[in-house]
Image (cartoon, rainbow, N blue to C red):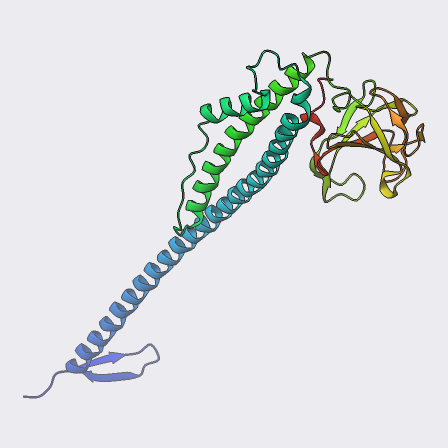
Length: 312
């Protein structure tokens, strides 16, 4: 049987002859190409959608991780700060019990019992903070954050309890006759403004991280600076960044230091009483303006002066 043919006349006048079999084959091939193109486009669209979804998920993951890292860093900083504060105030509490409480009237205690022993026994029996537990478990970032959060909450409770204990001891000392002469609880100036607290701060001149071992009390240039407790002058003179500087040993493990003064009114080896003028406010050394830099040391370690100072 003769194969049927088809004739196609082009606009140019050229005539193209081809069989129906070839036409069908051509249509089939074209259809396959179109199906393949549509399928390929669908696949590419699906892949693009997946990529966009994964990109969104990855961006959200990065943001969440960055937020977790920020929270973790803050928890670590809070943990470090509170542990340092806990060490300082615990040492101060021990120092108070050893060097100060012995001067308080103990007649109200039973014979052969000291206030130190009585208070310590009372605290031990009532102390509910000794509940620490742990183990060698491995932790991811969420686990670490959970542990730090729990630690910080427990440390805060212990800090609050210890601060209360110190406050009670100080109240007992003050109630025994106005305080003890060699205990540095007097303010070193008449009035003034706290221009820089104890601890971490931004450097006053160059910026950046700076550890400040005392209080800066801004007050009028030339105002008197007082010994905050009785003692012996260990050092009086120029001391590097402190400028004109005085250091007093109070004979009970406490020392105090005073810096940036404009003038010094005492000499090394001299005995001073509580409230005696030892110098005058200035801005010598590493200083941006008139103030006195005041430090308190217990057993050679700097502590926050607010732990022992009376209310201003």
